[in-house]
Length: 269
Image (cartoon, one colour):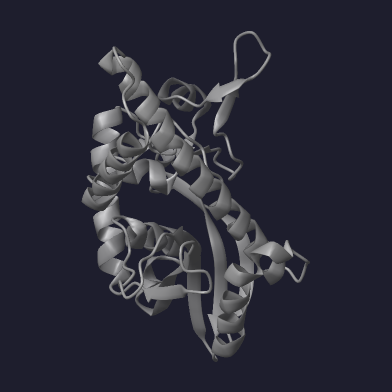
C-alpha cells in the first residue's frame, strides 16, 4: 500500500504504465532526484491514472470533517506565541496536524506490510501481532483462499489502474477481493466505509473478474483499529454493478476537468 503525498492533507497521486508498472515519480531535470508525476508527464508518456486519482474529484464530506478536526486539535496543542504573525502560527499548526497524519500513515503502512508477510507465510514484526493475529484468525475461520496479493490491475478500455491488497476464492465457486484499511475507532462506534471505498473495490473487481462477474464478487474492506488494538471490522460492499457504473461517471468528470483521456485510443464507451 504505497502512500504518496501530493501536499499536506492532499490526495495521493498514482500513475501506471499500460503494462501495470508504477510511474508515480519522474526524474527531475537536474537528474539528482525525482518529483511527483504530472498530467503533462502522463500525456507525454501515455500513463494511466489510478482509481484513487479518479476519486480525488469526488467531494468527501467525511474526509473534510476529519481534516477540520485534525486542524482544530493541532491548534489546541500549538498555542500562538506573543506577537507571532498569524501566518507563522497557521504554518506551525499545519505542521503539527500533518505530523499526526504522517505517524498514522507510518503505522498503517507497517500493519499493511505485516499482513502481506503473514499471508505469504513469512515472519513479521511481533510488535504488530495485536493488529495482525485477529485478522489472521478471521481469515482461517472463513476458509477463504488468497489467490493474489498486491496485484496491479489495469483496465485499458476505461483507462484506470490500481493495486489491490488481495483476491480470494471461497467455497466451490466463490470469488472475492479484499482491501485493508487502518482506522482510528471509538468504543461502541460502528465502522463504516469512507466515500469512494466501495467504488474503488468495484473498479478493481471489474478490471480483474470482468463486468459480468460483478454481481457475484464478494468485495470487502477489512478495517483494522489503531486506537482499539485487537478490534477489526469487515464491511461487505453491496451492489457492485451500481458502484462500478457510478465510478465510470466519476471517470468522465475527471477526464473533463483534467483535459486528458487515458483510455485506449481515447474511445468513448
